[in-house]
Amino acid sequence: MTASGASYTISGSLTPAQIAAVRQAAAEVLPQCRDFLASLVRIDTTNPPGRNYLECAQLIGHTLASLGYAVEYVEVPAEQLPALAPAGEGLPRTNVIGRLRGTEGRKTLHANGHFDVVPIGTVEDWRYPPFGAEVHGGRMYGRGTSDMKGGIAAQIFAVEAIKRAGLKLKGNIEQSGVVDEETTGVRNAGMGFLVDNGYIKADEIDAIVITEPLNTTNVCCGHRGTIWGTVTFRGRLSHGSMPGLGVNALHHACAFVQLATSTLCPRLADRRDERVIPPEARMASLAFTQLRAGDNINTVPSVAAVSFDRRLVPGETLADARREIADVLAALKATPGFEDLRYEYAENYATEATWVDPEQPIAAVFRDAIQVVTGQEAGIVSSPGSDDQRFPVHSLSPPLNATIVYGPGYISEAHVANESIDIAGELQVGLEVMALAFAAFLGVDAA
Image (cartoon, rainbow, N blue to C red; front, side, top):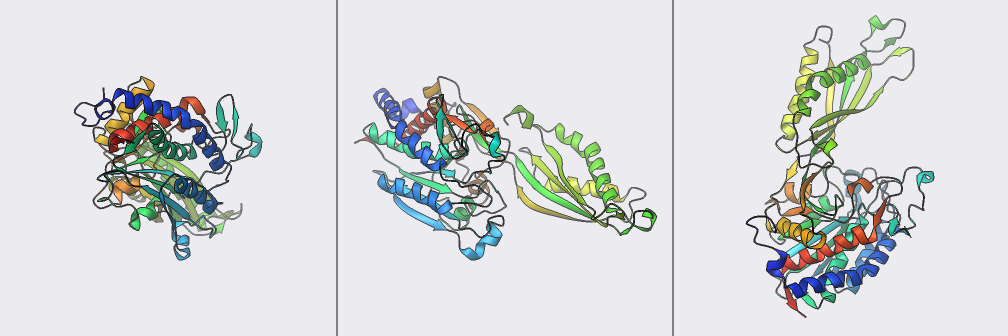
């Protein structure tokens, strides 16, 4: 059974014969889906800096066009690249959108995936070529197989499975492939750019599915919030043999870290969200990640910068998180010996925590599809990190809260050496789940 009270179910929208036909068709299009995924993986779209984006966008666009979609390429103007893609070395940013109109066209579902991938790290750590898309033991290996070119391949061929099953979608389906998810940013040149510039509109789309991997049997309804910030402390230079003549900015930075760790971090550990996976990420947290100070060993540093990663759980707000950090700084300044504390606070990324209703139709129909395909009750989870869900939920007006995350594969494969996806156990399962959910949500007619 799907969620109590949900108005969308697989069995309520599709006949048993249609369900069987869609699942069989998903198995039949799996080889095409696999081959398309391999073609995507073989294009090195490492970000930063954002290589070969146009080539990858065109592969997606040409494939969509061959399948009957109206295709639009969305390139970020060069003058906006320094702000939206500061790590992009001026390389072009090209997104792609395909639109396929249904027989009735009264509803629209948008499926989205990013095609940039993180760097491979040390090539010697890879058992198989990181952009080879080689298949061994039923798994395809390569950067992006799981995060998240596998999701893009599955979302496109899920619609093809519906067609092959002899059905036509009543509603409209949109497919987008976007850039720069991996380099985040308060705004970005991918999903953020599409939202900001009206390519995705709340009043024209009924729901969005972002096909990131988290766990093939889970529907993701949110993610933790994030602040990436830096506090820069200012002191006064002096010779290392006469530290009393200076003001040691490094001492101030270390005192801040110590005070925050002893006072704020224990309070954060008590704030938990049991829906977050993995369990180790369920509590709010503050991690100090970088410390930069000093130019040489015999000089008291006048500048020290400490960076932090603050993760929020639903119920916390960015305003509250900033206030708590400010309170630690104020307490330090009130401590004897630190009356001359001078500092600047800056953020290079921040997003509120996100949670959408798991009982809404798009979430309910995916949960039901997972149970039909896997025989397991779907989990309702939250992601440990932020993703492109934040743009439709937080940046559209009105917010498009009918935005969930579901894709083939597991988050444990993301960003690791020897990244891979199981073709039958993950790619095919995700393909079947999407096909059934798309068909149930948008409705179908016999071809």
